[in-house]
Length: 160
Length: 160
Image (cartoon, rainbow over all chains, first blue to last red; front, side, top):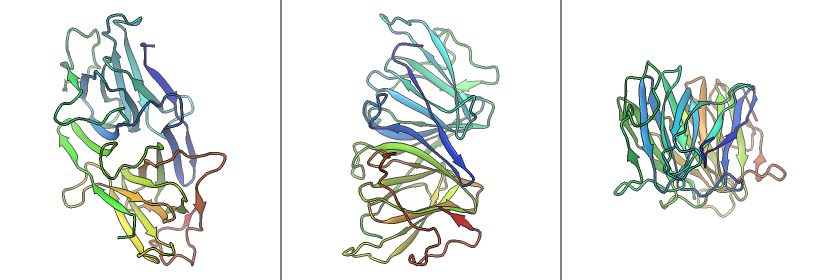
């Protein structure tokens, strides 16, 4: 696994009324700091990425559809430099064999995501710092950059 | 408005790729403290409620479908004691006339919710304290209690 990345398996408690699923708690080891919560929806055929941050750690959870999240580690000095990883984020309630997960993405690791097998994937992010509208800690790279050794699925035709 | 309740209008930035919507930031006035994030889904015809807390403040946001959230103030000494309020929480991207909202619910105020005009309403809650599994700060009252002067819509037949 890419250095600094972490995965927490989530568990939806379901009954005939619906479900309840804890996502991230202030008193658990994976938690660092609360910056904000936001939701981002991505349509089929589109990549939101590549992005990376210099200060911010992200925590992605899919709440509708299914997201394919891809990470790339470009960091000099990282034991996993050059590595690419694909994560499929299922939304709750999920199935026992493929439970929803929380994906922790450290600073300087490129990430992008797309809807996988659904019209829209809706992701909640709980980053460690709030978005600064005047001076965003967000750096971008073309979704289909040749510098990143990953090819998105064939149905993906655009991004940003 | 019931004393201590607050509403923040949310704004989804939409484009042909999807949307992005900020929910709650650590640096804004409505924010007090981060306890955890969880998601709860409720099916049509069911109420999740009545519940209240003694320490915890809730922040409800609907992310799928539409939720009817009802509040009741039983607090002695409150300027709004006895008051009932209905809030319809739209999910993003929403419409200009009915934008999504964040609903802040203070301690001791009863709350319950149901799906309104949809098969399922999915709510994110960002409470000020994490759920204590051994000693929950959660107090319950029957969904159809005669002590609370509210009748749920006719399609609602059960709760808890």
